[in-house]
Length: 373
Image (cartoon, rainbow, N blue to C red):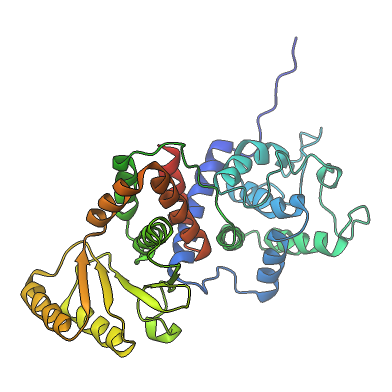
């Protein structure tokens, strides 16, 4: 008669649910506040950050696996790695099982942020019943002790709230590590005009504080310069920095081989206002830029006539201003450039998202839209 499998002391379904709930909360906090933290003790924060960025994959995976187990079932010992044969010990559990059935799938979804190993606990370092301090069999004993600094603190407190905060700090460091990665964006061999515009529209439909709009516009003007040879390169500003602060005249500067600005582009993901127009006229006139584009979904109705009049007087003074809805401009450009340009445009959107370290949630959204093509 086959031996009956013992039930795991960590409910994997509950663990997966907790993991996603906590990740959602931590990612939202990380996007809204750059300096957020969940643990007051500086030494624990440092130990967590160092462990998540350790050179060895098993060390990077250790804290999320062990702490998720503890968060799911507070009775277990987060320092235990194997359940063993002793049924009388309620603190023992199988950490490797949680890794393979829950953590591994999640990390893969997050661009394999902790490494691509299929089973980081398969090696000898983690094939022990329990983690012990100053284990001389480990190649990095100080690093091993740092892991235990965190887990010992959790076991000493035996506080569900403290465990949750430490786990959130671990997820925050994973999130910060993810921000530094380049994502993989799968682009199909053939892309129709309608598909390119549709996924751009879906991408822009989610609020991002202007990040998504600037990535799309930057990519479009990149391919315009590449395909039509109208300018050599496109300089772009960071979304959270003013043009004046970084010395740029607009969100995008299209420059020739000598560095002269051929075209300035202001990118809006909201209605264009008269104040926007006045500010751009002042900046571009000072730099003697003659050609200026605004890409905006609409013009504020109350300002429409005033904007028209103001742009007319600016033209008389020697400057040409053009107001376009992004999708109207993109439809014409991507139709003229054909499949090669459309594929390059999709690639360039990803390049902008990575180069400017856009929040991972926006990069994942673009990746998922491409995967659905």
